Image (tube, rainbow, N blue to C red; front, side, top):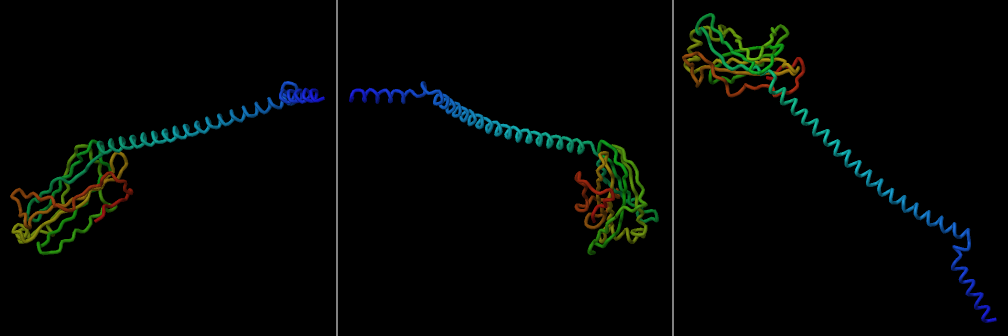
Length: 244
């Protein structure tokens, strides 16, 4: 009995150990577990690949965005540089006093477009006054009014604008005061224009003669150290008037 019981126990142990191959339900359950584990592993592997793919795609998108921004900045820089090289530059570069001490005394301002393209709707306004050297000098603005004549200034073009000075230094005594250094004559103004790229530009100028610098024999005025400036490719309203 003991031997048979031992044999039966061994048989049960053997059957229990080999239930996978002897029990169809257990066998298929085992396969399902294996398949499930495999699918879970495959899912985790795919998820890892997807995360890596998303990271790579995000990095590529950021790189593409950066490339577009760099390209846009380069294009803008190239466009701005081209416009600066080609646009009109209108300046007042010389000033003279003619017929001093007579009724026809006047100041003549020479202006030039040193740019490579025309300046459109050019408007020039000029003011003048004489001051004693001990005076507090005030330069009133010279705004361009609605009746100011406009013209087109071609590249390389030059011309002059005169302003009568008879009310200011029409008398010989007034001229002597300036020539003796006790007074000074100032002429100032502004030039407004639109360049070929549709940007409104301005130039402000100021010349003087007399005072400590004297009155040259050629009657040429000096360019002042202050009061001369120009727009730096900024955008201005259509009716922009340079500030005083």
